[in-house]
Amino acid sequence: MIGVCGGYQMLGRSIHDPLGVESDVRSAPGLDLLPCRTVLAPDKTTALRYGATARGTRLSGYEIHMGRTTSEQQLPPFVRFENGDTDGVRTNGIIGTYLHGAFEHPAVCAEIFGVEPTREPAKTEQYTRLADWFARHVRNQSLLGVV
Image (cartoon, rainbow, N blue to C red; front, side, top):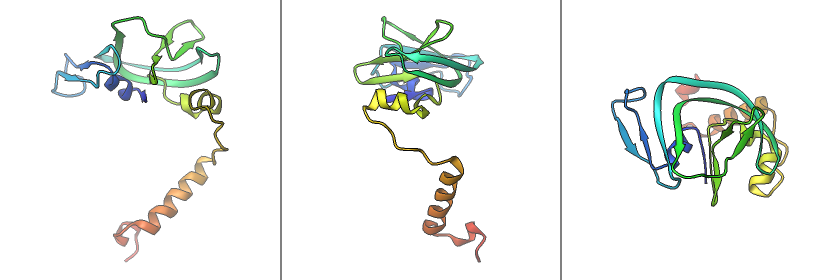
């Protein structure tokens, strides 16, 4: 199971929002799959990061979150950044990370999933495929400008 950003937070025991940053709900239980707790803060972390997994696979990605996730016990990190900081956890078939884009790296996917991904089409090709699918399957033709 993999949780990125809010998904990582939900893998823990609880998410707390004491200042009402995201909602009026001040506390919510998590899935309790990781011994972690998240507290939302008013300041947002935004950073482009470079690093490697514990197995040495190089990667990059970006962080954009308002949560601070802390673990109740020492867990292996998902990634160690170039400056020595760590992010997330990787344990018992579970990965949690704040690093968006980590799984866009074929070498990371090969390490985690054990398979070499096929060539990914360019984003323009993906958007064209999505538009074609939508045009074939939409029931309300007026959404497409067809009357």
